Image 1 (cartoon, helix red, strand yellow):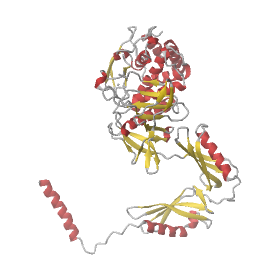
Image 2 (cartoon, rainbow, N blue to C red):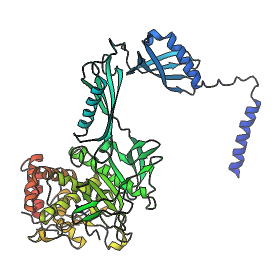
Image 3 (cartoon, rainbow, N blue to C red):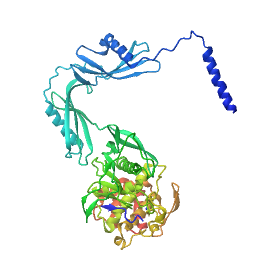
Length: 549
């Protein structure tokens, strides 16, 4: 388990009346013989008109006596034009891709039609060679494969015989809805289309519905959220990001003995009736959940869109959040055992709820480190572990480009309160400003707490991105010295992130120390930009600037 430790964080009225009177007078003086506007056709009228059109336009629409039609939707325009959408069957079997829309004039006469397919939808036989149980087995296997082979619970598969006109020439097929739960209890579902004569797969797609809502967070303003509809409510669960979800720990704590947790605080999934979450205040327990979910969203997107990593473990699976953990708990932590992040509410004096964006990025990055280099959480490798989370968490904050929480090189600045005695947990431009962290490497750095030995790498990261000296970046003033008196020029945040991520995932190991980190990042810079490149030389110079040779 990795933690952020010691985060000790009435002239106008007359005109209006005259105008209104004029309108009333104009209406009163209108000729009595003025024709009244025709009433807009009702839904029933539109359906009746469309049904008559189907009889007269059957040949044009490809309709035969073997087919059936059913109304799916009706739209009546303001001018009375009517649009009736139909689904089709063939010998009582649903036809995928057999839908069409009939367009009618205000008087109900036929205008035109749009059809999903113009092919003849008849098939030679409606008797399958592949039986329903076999189709169910094939769909279940496809569902498991789509979830990385995970052993799923409560799996069901419901095959339905159909005519498939979606994929070229119509053919007899099984449409099977397979569903189950993953190891975290999250719903997984997939629609699988199987050729009913050969058993070959025609197509498949995920079948968990999503909805886009929004939430009022504590620190990041109003943010978009992908959620999961569930009956008449919505769940704070994101199917587009591996089913990442956020639950309420109800201010309970885990029951642990040494490093073994006998039970975990619950994480009751947050739900909402209108898909508008939180109030932006701590009085609404959903507000902290919004921050946590948003933080995981941004971290997921950063790793995927910038580094091509599909989820924390690289397997497309989402982690989950527990908010409102413990009582006045001044901490946040990642736990590999539950593959989850946990956030305390803070004591209100030193810290507020620890659900800030860079904290979320920090915690999830511990999971990335665990699944890649596995940096041992002690000594210099432990400092590099913590620094990796600070560096990548900072880059997540910059990536999010959120005006309510703009990017900076301060760690946890949103969560600290006046009783903390400073403005952030840590400062990357000059780590020693926190009173404990090391700016420069020495032979004793490894003896420090990992949250303080991390300062050397944090200092390196700031210098590599921005360079040394006094400057203002995104409205924040920094003054970063070097340990050897040199002046170094930064190469930008994007290149910092690319180099550090490659070093972490390709070259670092569980025991990498600072000298090893220098070698790993130089190798990464060489791979990405070439030996002797500006970037390569900058990495070497900046490590020297923090006394790592």
